[in-house]
Image 1 (tube, helix red, strand yellow):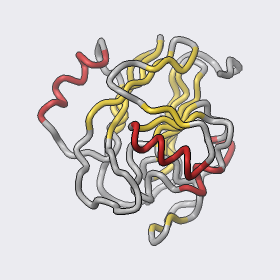
Image 2: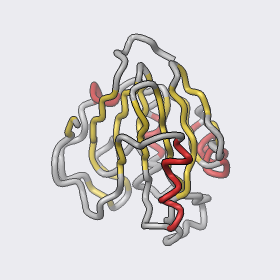
Image 3: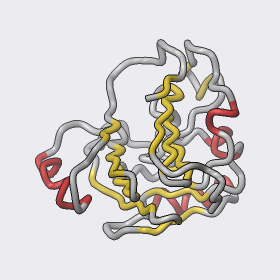
Image 4: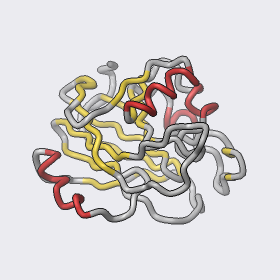
Amino acid sequence: MRSDRRAGMRITWLGHSSVVLDLDGIRILTDPLLRPHAGLLRRLAPRPDPASWSRPDVVLVSHLHHDHAELRSLRMLRGAVLMSAPANADWLRRRTQMHAVPLGDGWSQVGSGVEIRQVPADHGQRPMLHRPNDANGQLVRGPSGIVWIAGDTGLYPDMAALPAMAGGSIEVALVPVWGGDQSSPADI
């Protein structure tokens, strides 16, 4: 993994569920939707500047709906490691010809003391016959903090267990809010 990035935490929202998390020298991109559209979904705001999302080390895919696993956007990220639920990772590997790593209940090291683990999400509606659709979120932790990336989820009883799964307090939660992209990328 690259070590030319500063330590600390920086979060950049690119629209919809696409977020760049720079954590302790590792660049993580979530559910990339980098093009002007994904099927019928049209971006209302300008496309994110490639400088804001370029060269991720890891791409997290919460589930395989087209607005979270848009194949042409994923193919723009050659060199990154894709991470998702096991059935999703296998499908992504075949469709993108990229390195895809299945996430499980344990922690996966991604470098510089940063690790990722899969956590539950409740997003069972709208099954897709031609894609597996294991929905999940992720916990990402590094020396600068712990982030919960919820993916597409509704409330579920085991959310209360997330801090225990994280091994500490969650400093930042990236959670879904229903609606379309109506603003430009924002730094947090």
